[in-house]
Length: 610
Image 1 (cartoon, rainbow, N blue to C red):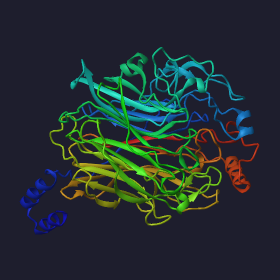
Image 2: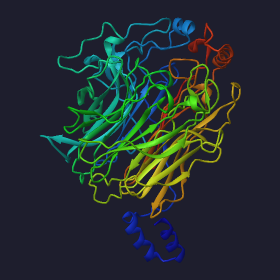
Image 3: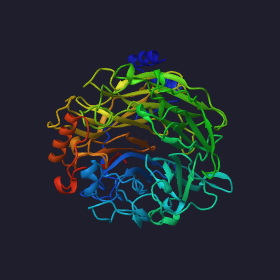
Image 4: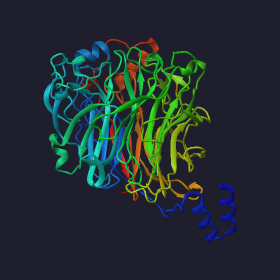
């Protein structure tokens, strides 16, 4: 069919083109003309000059299909952490206190992403502690999700967002308004903070190391989002776990097309690492994928294990499955995409397979995983200090799982009436070799049975670390956001700059899929050496993903930006010494005294065409 459409275009017959386009992909129109984006800081309530409170990572965003002026974002935000305690960092090379203060920041835009607000609520905080030694956290102002301390839980980050219709008397309708779902990792507060409150009677509490909790907010307005009472207390999706279980890398989605017979259902997927509370190459196996379904607006959940618990730490199952994304089409079919990673011991880079699991009955039953295609991971080198995959150099920013599928689907929301159900998938890929990494896009117009494209879309010289797509509900325009380093692999050279920036691309969609990709926004460069995870000094951090979303009229992308992160010579010298020694050297520098004020200052930036 693709060859036929090319042949008709060659004949120059506009009528024939339109007729064939209607047969192939339901007459997807093409939006012509240049598209530009406006950039803005998302975490507007976070400081720029106080380590580690100036650190953010792992952004997510959702657009309300019923009210596209509204965006809600989440990110790991260290705004409420204690300023890096001198005694801890000097003696242990970390600012990490593990004291029960969470990191799940939340932000709102009511003008399509041009401006953002970060509400202040109350909860467990250490933001006003001194910086000499570790302090006891206490109740106070927070820039994160509320009601976790009161529920005996920790909001432990890894956020995902979805917006669907609000239920009233058990019925879903956009006329009832909208409901925001914010999922994140959660753990019992008692594991961190012995003097914390006990959970309310009847509240499910994770038995294992961590579970996924979902917070909900109805009908966000500029006034309502400032009120803590507007949020419902968090709900644990799967409360029946083993004592060593740790859930991580989840995805959430609300069926937001009224044409779906399961309109309003909410789905949450997550890898459940069942051994020693760990994951990745160091532990956590087996790690089956589980999927939760809620048909009552997130009050209750039905959880199913949909892949076998066959990860043994040997052979192909070494890293198991992780990094899931969920979408629904206009008919209510659920698509769960996930990466099955191979064992890096078999050789680097690893070859990950994008897989698909589906439900055709609203989550009651699920298909077996089906392999779609194989991609090449970015992991050519594993850092000897962090034992993580790095792309920009040793002591660099971790990138394992970077090739996980990030997917969007044109389901015609909010009504579903003009859906094309075109699926778009984007990821960074190293198939062309080290220093030739590219952001690639593939698409499917037949329910993920076949795929086209595999097109390289990133700018020349960019080496993308993470990428994500979005597609308009009507299927006429696509977007891709990515973050990239532009310097070649430097090995153990820690003195040369590591330039890094965020980019938003867009393309019209026609009968053959996305057309010419153009740059809507190219951000200024920062230096990755000025970043760190907010706790360990031994490495950089801007992962583990980026996110994009689209309405009928605009698209938005979020990434972690390092333009205002200053490189700290004392830290770079210490990293070099630690790399040579094979372990962190003690004593370590104290960032609050030995570094520029904005060392570690990463921010969440957005670029919107709205």
